[in-house]
Image (cartoon, rainbow, N blue to C red; front, side, top):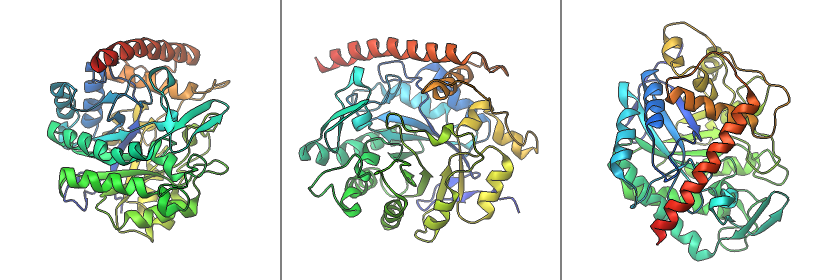
Length: 396
């Protein structure tokens, strides 16, 4: 029996109307001051109209200091809450939930707007950062918790703690980034300490009935990075927390590393890990990465390894895909094929595709990849200028 359209009640009591969630993507649609735009309102409204159980907004920052991109949102006490309430309302239509992914890029923070800092100082080709002090680390759980509470007050349906893809909490988990010798480094029990502290602080701030999810790498897919055994140890530790959903992914944005989402192979990519994780936790599991057809999604659910399917690029190609699947139409979207792709080119193309959807202007044509990259870069440069002006004024 197909489980795709069965409801699922999370441990906190919130019910997903089906098993398909729009996974977090960095849509880069913030206005450069950390606030959402009309195109962003419409983008998440379209996914809600298209039938998803929930959407996750990628990389929402708790402060402007360590953003991944200048198109990220920033939600803190200085934010204009009315604009976030509008985003929450528009993205929660049609019975959908809208969750904020709480991010901190750490060592991978956008250098033009940040002074990158990670668990340890690094000086590598394409990656330089300072080490966070113990005082800075100890302040992070409360910072995450304040933003989670603001998200709850604004009407969002939940939050996701981003501990994957090489961003800060993922960096703490990874021995490649984390060379600390104090209580936050060394063995995996120490390297996961900050993540567990963040989860506990958020739960204390939002109460027992607000969904908290965690995005976790199955591995960093990098020599010397987080490996499968340590990732499974994190899953086992999360089982003792109040987390409502663990979103399994993999890979990292470490300079030069290949993104799992850029693979041309058939997905899904991390189902074997999910099968092993299933034995370690009663928490519902979501799998993100490489789902290209309805049959793949149905098979993953039927295996019992996972409870929720995370779709990202498939929903960028067809925002109404869930409704189409439920009507037994369009079993798979047509994924574009590119040749001679520059580094970051595919990410740029999909990001610009999200802009088209938010403007109700998407077409079936693939378009010029290099032009998409140029437009993406030009927009980042313009928003970097806005970001620096705006947050310099705020600091003043």
